[in-house]
Length: 342
Length: 240
Image (cartoon, rainbow over all chains, first blue to last red; front, side):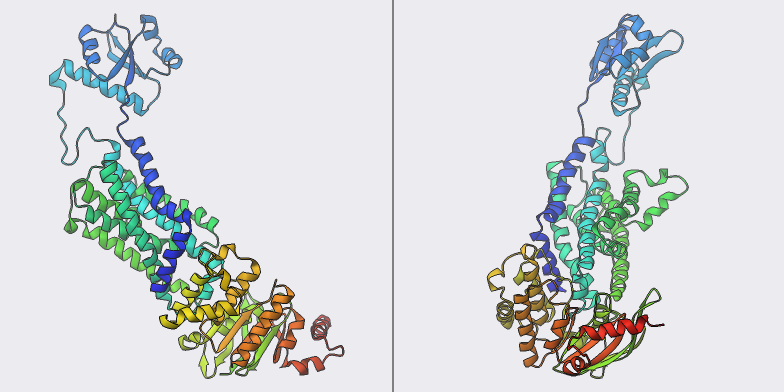
């Protein structure tokens, strides 16, 4: 088993692309996610007819992080046409005699939502009694989407990249007949799977440390709990990913087929990882998450990073991952019977 | 240790690929599995080493049925396609398999150097296998098969795609192993190679059409060419 683990480590180190995929790709994508979901500092542009908007409203709007553009009464009346011709403007704000405030937007988008948010804040400033004080048990109103969902990406990356490498490596072992040759040596079936798991676990540990340190200390991902539990969860998730990859490799006879199986095996797990609240998914489909390993990892990481949970709170998720890995380990060991009965 | 096959049968999707094959290879012999492509040579080797279960019949090494862990330790296997780890060096491949066969660390390095010398790859031991030529890969694959000094060696088409000079060298190595007492079962579709063997098992469409000492097999042909036995089998099968 140790021999096999050593070989996996040497082989992976000699394959620079695999090293990049395990250690560099997660950081690169995490950085992109940080910029995509982080605070964009976007300043929305709102067009108003200054003659038709009350002066206190204009004053309040000017206090917000908004860029105001003056338009004529005709342009305000033809707000839809105006927005089509001025794509740099996010919203047209009008005050109508009978129906009050009217906001026209180019399309439903984050930019439009920013404009609406700022207008609503300006209205609240004019009428403080209408302002709602919002408090959270965990987190703050100012936190970015990256702070809210960053934990999901830690779980996804620790699973996905190790899964890809291990599934591809095992398919290659089968297609190049090295697995058959391996099974003609006095190694036990259980040792083959354990050797693979151990070998990739070394990379999983290094990957987990790099990703967590980068996310928390460089990208400033908010963390309420003990990083050690996050690392443990990520390593456990990566170990499960090795077994998951080995199981998927049974159903694939080439590297291309592994890629073809990703939409069936990995992408559904992304949706059930916590990216979308599970109780919002209709027909109780959220319960499907219980058969998906990424769910257990993401839930445990969320517990630690968002709620500040400790081992006593997340042990159930860790147990779920361990059971998952053990079941897959047994399946993989049995699958090797194809090459040798004992 | 003799290897005995008795009424071995194997089918894939209702097509018989090995059909009632029985023969015995005595210890220390070179037995050649000879036959055209698709005759069942590789399947028969995989059945013998326990990589495939037979549908019926028995395969025994001495008194032991395969697969058996104790026998696997004494068995060397060179598959038809080289089955090497291309991201490792020649030395890395040998060290890995040496570890699997539990070669003692203090002698492992010396043994690796010895087999590298045998297959004339000493000067390339640190090169990654992906940079090897086809012939070099074959030689390394052979080196892995003989690394742990097995009692029984299974070689599946070891000289396929090899130039005549290297082929002669490889056969010289087989003869040297035989002289040390190794039993060798070697498959080939190159008819001329049969003269290097003690016994020949002639396979045609999954059936054993002849099994005998090579000199006797050659005596059975008018021209002294082993192909004639296959032509006869082909004609007999075509006859209504």
